[in-house]
Length: 241
Image (tube, rainbow, N blue to C red; front, side, top):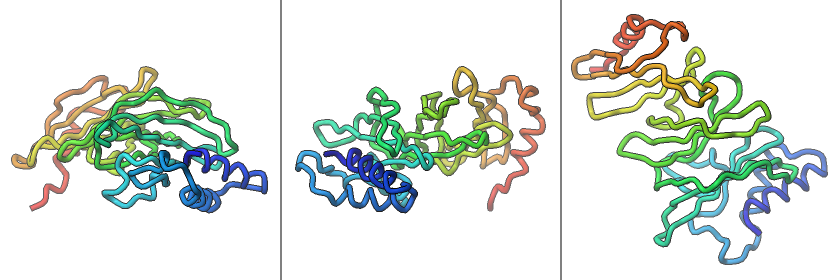
């Protein structure tokens, strides 16, 4: 029995007794991790865990679960190539009561520095799922999954940035900071619309010249923005020494 099955069954049993709260889920997952399993199913990457409990620098490409709320969780099952490196993952969406809500097609990934996480990117009160796809020297590209009106997650596009904690919700926009080189950084803003992630603007930030310039913008007025204010706010930053 896989770690996912053990987790689901353990929480389903807890629900039958009354509830499957966060503490119960943690205990259930610990039991699942310690339960005997066929040797072929024991992960060489450390077994199953909660994605958001990994320390910084740990857990990359490791099978893990994310708790959405008291009723639902997500499970990321990484698939490895012949050399043992993660090459794909399958995302499945579940109820703790034991129902599988959806399962994705395999998603191509490369070895990454971070782990998947949940974050409300646009400030609407519902968390988005961010799955790291690949990492460069500084930036990681994330697949962004947005919840629909039923609570199911679906992919809406990709964001590049330093990490999940670097993304910011600002006036309904998703702000993504990234770095081009030692002195050139970027701030990209997008909104989650009917067609997915829609670019609104991008600012190039030159730390050597201490200047900012818009490299892209569209329909700023509809977002309650204007170019001059964006540049002024950007150049008012603390540039450091």
